[in-house]
Image (cartoon, rainbow, N blue to C red):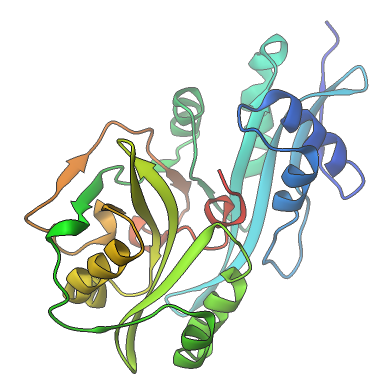
Length: 282
């Protein structure tokens, strides 16, 4: 077997990689949907769309990458979010060099928010750090709106936010699979982004982002009441997003932990904005 080559995915080769994903990934997405998701980016300069493994002229594997520029604790930071990692069994031994091609790019913090068990092991070998994988599940039926207000329409949200908070809303408002709600009080809002799903067969809201942990904790009952009114019987929120865990809840563990690689950032600096978690409906 000839040695495959690793090359950056360009705008010209992205459709080919997208077709490879449509044919080989378990998610039922068209090539056009894969390409559209991978074209999402929030970086000043996009170096590539990831890297592919090519053997005898055809794609036999690849890793997508979504790039973003973020302000973290007052500093501008560059992120590369690894996504859609897929290599044919015939070329599985080249998975490690493929991953190393991605993380060899200087000046980036790297994240992977959907690793399989095998991918998670590879990332740990490459010194990625795990995020707390515990998920708190709260039954919304026990909540009562003791305090706080809710803003949930696009008009309400856009006029209630300003500055960087408004930019976050504007950058994520166009994805139809994301839900947005503000809880708190005017001038003291927590922006919550969530996905609609099911847990144990019942409708559930899965929180992807909260802008302020303290406000979220204080107004949690109001959020649960809002979700209940939307038809969600439970709320799922990662344990690391909460300062305290509600008494009436349970914690699920045993998931493949999401991971990151950074010489300077801490786990508390990592969220799912500007990544595959919001750009792809997986």
